[in-house]
Amino acid sequence: MNVLGIETSCDETAVAVVRDGHNVTASLVSSQVAKHADYGGVIPELAAREHLKALRPILQQTLHQAELALDDIDAVTVTSSPGLLPALLVGLSFAKGLAAATAKPLVGINHFLAHVFGAFLETPDRLQLPEAYPLLTLVVSGGHTALLLTAADGSCKLLGQTLDDAAGEAFDKAAKILQLPYPGGPVIDKLGKVGNPAACDFPRGLCGGGGQALKPKNRLNFSFSGVKTALLYQVKGVENAGNLDQPLDLADDAVADIAASYQEAIVDALVKKTLWALADTGARTVALSGGVACNSRLRQKMADAVKVPLFIAPPKYCTDNAAMVAGLGYYYVRAGRADDFSIDAAPRLGDVSMVPFALGA
Ligand code: KG4
Ligand code: ZN
Image 1: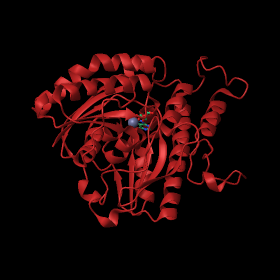
Image 2: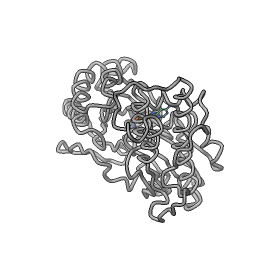
Image 3: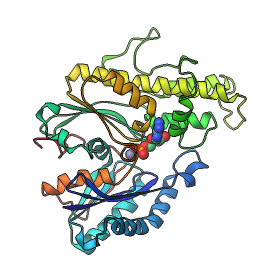
Image 4: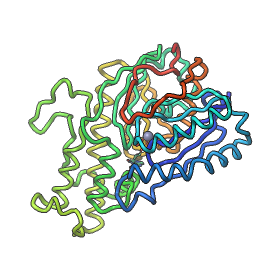
């Protein structure tokens, strides 16, 4: 079954064709990063306009690369939530048009669950093993930081999530403070390789320590606003913290040390909470996905710490892409789901209580 995937939830316009859930025939991503760089973050209206321009040519290129015609597509799947509302609406409207024109089923996809699936796009066998469950996934992206536990029957439990910034957002905001280019994650990752991760003692949010007891309800939640403020004070001083436009008076190696220490604080919190969740639940597989899963320090520290099989998607399927959308979509279509044309876009996380790709789902 050839499933078309469309992804426009943020600043990447992506289209893919995936055969039978895991065989990626073509996956194209057009990034708008350069358009948003001047603002140090994604502007929703601008993102929507760029999706509008990019979708049709990218669809044509994807079909060309897949050596398929629109008629060869068996279903149209599209990210309908969560994300930036104007951006989602463009992709969803485009998908509705395609589904109507081809008389093929339309399925709206949850972007968060698509990231969860992304870790298994290239390893379908793992999903078929009873001993793989329960499966613990850490989704870390520009919009999410959450731990999801999936049972063999496909039922899911959100164990914890960020109470403020997502990990990717924390990287991007830090880069802005350090006057580094957008998006900040890849730049800080690079600096982290040359800087000293022990140079600054940044707080590990909601991990306890520092004389502060951790409330049980926050055991598996995350918080990155404290470390971001600590970075701001470190760089600008408390009195000057509001003056973000002033040039930074820091040598390159000092910036690298600060970036490495900041990355270390975020990575430590992510790894620690994943280990706690593993211990609490007895999960037998760990998956790591979302754009921040590209981070080399996180990949390394997670691989060193996790003693059950660990699945991390290749970077191209960690950052936003449509292959993860089409792959997840295949399982819904196979189960007979088709959304009607009144399906709406929604910015919030929505229902993540079930996935269709688990062994007994
Ligand atoms: O999954 P994604 O492409 O989009 C969302 O769904 O948000 O994630 C984008 C985020 C950005 O915040 C970006 O800075 C971060 O992923 N990111 C990284 C790295 N590559 C991308 N963060 C840390 N290290 C990286 N190497
Ligand atoms: Zn994403």
